Length: 288
Image (cartoon, rainbow, N blue to C red; front, side, top):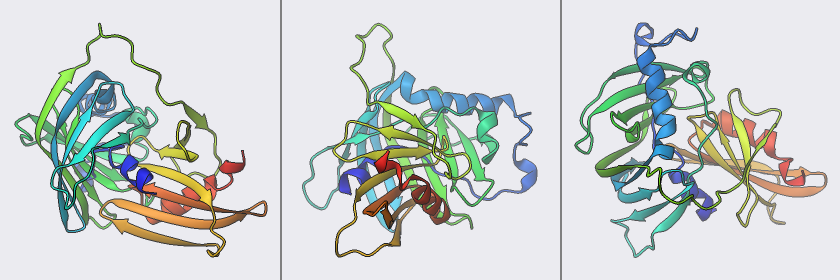
């Protein structure tokens, strides 16, 4: 589970919005402000077009960690190094898959948007993109996006009652545009789209190959979770359990599928109802 937990850390460096009056939120008829459309598109392209390295502060459940992160443009892997770890830890290679590419109009069915000028973060100009969920199947986020690249400089995640769950903020960041003349990158992990009935509205799943365990990546383009399948231990009865640490929920469900015990674990920035629906929808995937 540790590998999967750390893999999720870099899937999204994001957070969600505080509840603002309905009058300031963009409408859902896709007559969106062009500035919002541009900001969403730039954010989704940023990891493909820019390499970056820097140090950010992660505040979650009363803990504070300074983390160095590096990412090369177009890669689905990055590296994290906890610089203030209580004991010596090696830098961690992390899996950072991109979620399904969603237009601002598509995301507008899932989130209400609001855009405004943001503060300087790590010495860089930003805009603030607020995302308020339209249902109880995703968290809210407030994202400070770099003016130049669209990278997320600061993120805050909120529960459905507006409680701040987690905050990430870069203290320093170096951004480099992708070198179009560089040699072609090596093959990336195969992400095979799966048509899974029963996933929460707006979520899509991909089967990730190249790991010791079979795993899924589930995302609505903003919210994301990793799903890991394991044999159900003999001494563990079917049932469920959940633990939230900051914005990250770890939900496990033991089920018997075709006479075989399966433990499905959903790890991600999703509400408990969404995790339950995801686990129910994907629990038969290991037998595909």
